[in-house]
Length: 233
Image (cartoon, rainbow, N blue to C red; front, side, top):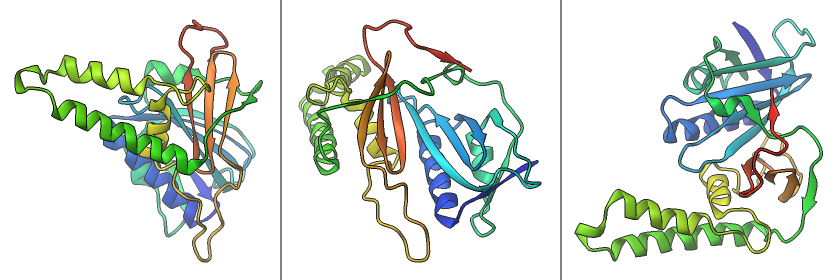
């Protein structure tokens, strides 16, 4: 099995937490791994949110034997989680699986430009809390006979399809970032490296929007733009 040497214990713990959260939403989740040099991108798609989640993991060296080659494979998220050894700061790459359709269509590698108007992290967290409370309030008000799956889905779509100000970013993308642990405060642990210090920002490239945080990114297709700028890899 190919062995990945992670940069430190924080990277191992954060990767494990990310995979655990993906598996919470889909016990059979798959992730696509793309790596070269000392960076590994882990792509996942929590089905409840209809977004792509990307966690970039820093590596101490690419592989056990130190070969500088690229990695591109889709694997079981559960098997990858089981392979993580936080004490040894390593992770094994499981056998490849037949990837779901989303794994073949990823956001573009380049061409990203900054989009203005994104609120501060605290404001985004407050926004998510408010819309969750609204969803619960509206569904609690439904009569028992009206509380059907179709009605709950309708309310959910109406709430989570709203955009963040004038950015065009759907609220569900921010909810996904919060639920996957990407919006938590960036506080370094004693003896461990701090997370990526790049600030929260919103980017666009063709049909895609990408919410970048110190812990990972959420990418989503903008409505009404068809199949523009699809990167099939």
